[in-house]
Image 1 (cartoon, rainbow, N blue to C red):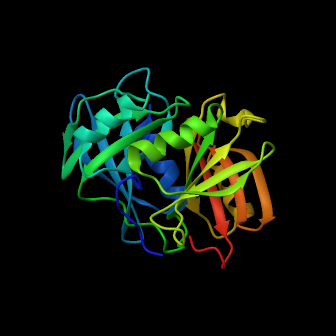
Image 2: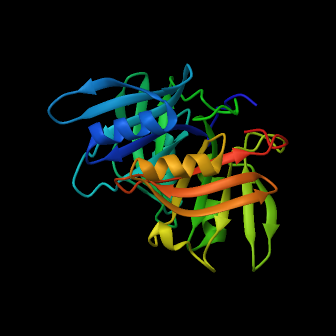
Length: 262
């Protein structure tokens, strides 16, 4: 499966950190990414990230002291002005007017579980998805700490997301989404019964990257100063590691099973 694009699908990710030079070195050594400076002035520094010739997203210094250290997932929209209206009408929040960037516009927003995300309109979306190559993107999952039914409906209303109910019981609730029933790119997990302690009470979109071997990856990550929060092996979908980078940004590493296209 190649990278899929369209309204309501993940289109870009970026990382906000305090120390961008340290983050750049960490991720270059961890994944072998190519991280190049795109913008740099007194108020804003932005780097682009590529992996084996395909784009992943970006990396930036924090825009204000209150911005969390985190990976942010951006969702594509053909009309960002209308999507800003739709987000607010559905009970979410937006934090910037549509802001120009090279090739389009963006803004920051949050949903009904207070989960942050971005909106992006334009060209230059990521392409490092669906190739099953180490370092590529492979999944986007919202860990929902509260209001799961309302959160799912929010994404249906705002983005016309196609949700598939994989499990819908009181003890386990998980929906997937994608451009059609056969191509799924992410999921919604109801974590309200047992919210993962490593998320520090914050519902968020978890960005997942492909690795060749989870044990080798976690060993390397800790050598570079990262933290391993949890691992899962031999699941029907592959092996996983939930981790934080040295500055505290959460992400997931995954070795997909061959039968599960990344």
